[in-house]
Image 1 (spheres, rainbow, N blue to C red):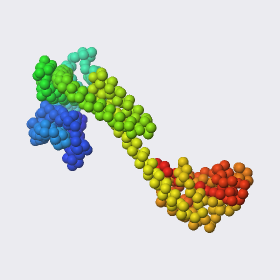
Image 2 (cartoon, rainbow, N blue to C red):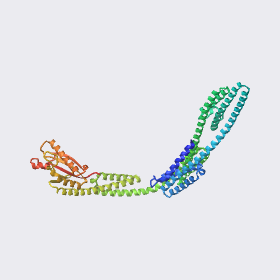
Image 3 (cartoon, helix red, strand yellow):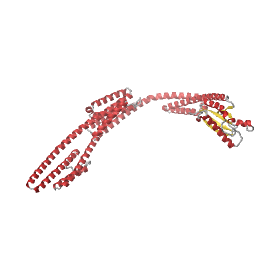
Image 4 (cartoon, helix red, strand yellow):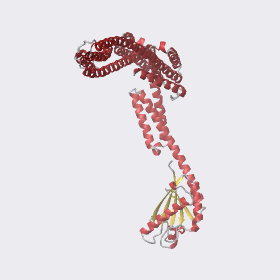
Amino acid sequence: MALTCERAMITVIWVCAVSVLISGCTANLPPDVDVKTVGNFVVDARESIALARAGSASENAPQELARAESLIEEAQRLLRKGRSRDAADLAFLADTEAKIAIALSREAELDRQMIQIREGLLETILETKTDQVAVAEARQAIAERKALEAQKQAEETSAQANEDMERAKVGLDIAKVDLELSAYRDMVKIDDDTPEDELPPYAKEAYVKASSLLQEARSVLTAGDFQEAIAATEEAAGYASNATIQAKAKLDMEAEESLRARDKAVAAITKAELSFEEAEESLTGQYAEDMHEKAGNMLKEAALALKAKEYDRAESLAEKARVSASSALAVAEAKERETQTREAHEDARANALDAVAKAERAIAEAQAAGALEVTSDTYNQAQTALDQARQAMLGEDFEKALPRAQESAAYSSAAMAMIEAKSEHQRKTEETENSIREAATKIPEVTVRKTKKGVVISMGGDLFAPGSSQIKGDAQGRLRQVADLLKKYAEYKIIVEGHTDSVGSEESNLKISSERALNFLRYMVDHEKIPLERLSSVGYGESQPVASNINEAGRRQNRRVDIVILTTPISP
């Protein structure tokens, strides 16, 4: 079973390797790969190479191991040159080659072990079986000879000969079961007289049961009860076979666990070696020499433990060595940062002073330009950030003072931009409103005026028949001119307002004014293709007259539709 799993793993690794090579290996990596990520690739590759070396890959897969070692060396060289992406590609290929070498080596080793086990077991079985068969055959020959002699002497002696033959046959079956139990004892390293309480836990019950049944078979065979002996022997054979199978499975599992423990120890040592080398390249000799030396000593002890097959101890020592090396590196880096911090302190103070001065000038310019009136919130934010920067300078917190001063300057710049934008917006809005009013005055029978809402184009009540909300056919020409104007200024939204005179009830006037405004909107959408999202309608009834309702002339002016072109642009 272990061999089958190993071969399956080899197949998977080969498929993965081919897939990776076809797809461009690390094609899913970004163009720029950070050093830490490449370092992880290198660590993985080196772990795999270490496992390959320890697994006799130099004998069983020398080409793959050599390629992996060559690729990782080239990856490290490219990494030192700053070519992170290329280094990541080669490290990934190196890791793949190493894993292929590991798989090939394990396959060869397992094949070799299986051949040895099979040859040894077969030889033992054949030798024992040959002896047992020879004895049985001799017994059977004797029995046959006796039976022949007895047959010649007298008919009554034939029964004894048949009994001897049956006894010999059952004896042969007992010998086979005994051979199976002997194989079990060899695998678990016990004797046939080992006490039951000292037997290994796995397959113990099956072994004890088989031994008991075998003893019972011998006893009933001696008593001449052949059928009982045959039944006990067959049952004993089943238990013996089960015990052997369980023992083999347990030994295979223990072998796999030992192999995994060794792999973990090798990987831990490889990681510790990488940390030790990384620390060695830093300033640990100057700042953390003792810690670095301690890591080196523990790394040597871990290698010795690995050689002695003390895998758990080797892994533990390697981890301690890695932690010690990492700590030495951290101490060295901290000391170096401390030195750099002192040197950067003065630079930070100068940069902060310069930023505060710039922020003060910027806020003064914004105040002079009227920022308090135009955008008081932005101006106040600039002042608050400047105050915080000044306070941080007093406490010599230059790292805080610099961004606060820069933030104040940014708010001041934003305030200036808002002032300029508002002025420009007002200018453009006035120009647009004048253009709309000039174009609207050319439409017959309309009046144009400017309100806080925007430009209002009023169309008289003769758009609709008296008491009706349906648009009259002779008004379509003027409606088209209005629509053309609205299309020209498509960036503005439109409100259609319906108004009536005071004739009739207030409720009915409000209803008809709303219906007329809505029908006007629908006409613009359906016939003139004005986008619906630009339009909205409302009816005011008689509540907003523009003339007196005493006479017909005034009432006619009040019966109107106002098209309000808002001067606020449509939100995106």
